[in-house]
Image (tube, rainbow, N blue to C red; front, side):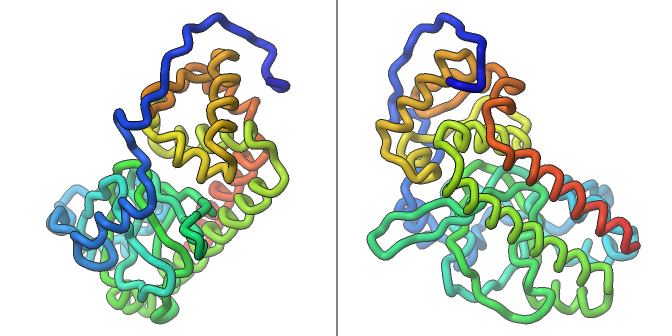
Length: 287
């Protein structure tokens, strides 16, 4: 590993993709969606916000009291189980999701059945934010990759609220710009950076969003995410484990040295962190 000088002794443990799978094949996620109402409207939706409303979504968290009150009674909390498909390409966007926890992937499916991840979104994201400007259709498949939750409301109600508040409309625009920037940065990363640096980048981004050092996923999903073959994933994971950065076994990654992972990641980690911070700052400046 070129960017890490520390080497440690370790015991290699077998990876068992059938145990503790966290990121399943896209067909499995689609089958899960077929057992639930469209646009991810499962029965695990909880009642509207209580008197204490302290959202972790970065956009909701910084809203002034008036705008937060405007949305408050419209929001319900939806649990997001791994594998749930929230959107399919060309599907009418019916709900807006303020991602509160966990992680979702924007995935571009191809005609041969393969797919590649074009962006990962967490609590810095508003899925369906363009609904503030009118009805529209999704461009990608959106899949929950790590369990979490979101505050959601019907797209039509979000649009009506945005019509009453220039700040909400500004928030929707900034959120959409941030998602576009994440997609563009991921495209550049996939084309120009090594699979090793991309894997380090992806692990760090997940850690930023879920605040946990254990990430459950399979060889197959990692291969899809990196756009490489499964043996390549095994080789990269072996090298990262050999360097003492991670432990990779039984469908999970355990982060052992986050600082070293950040050094091993490409520039995209900091680019996206800075873009996120700048976007939230721009929203604050509009108050």
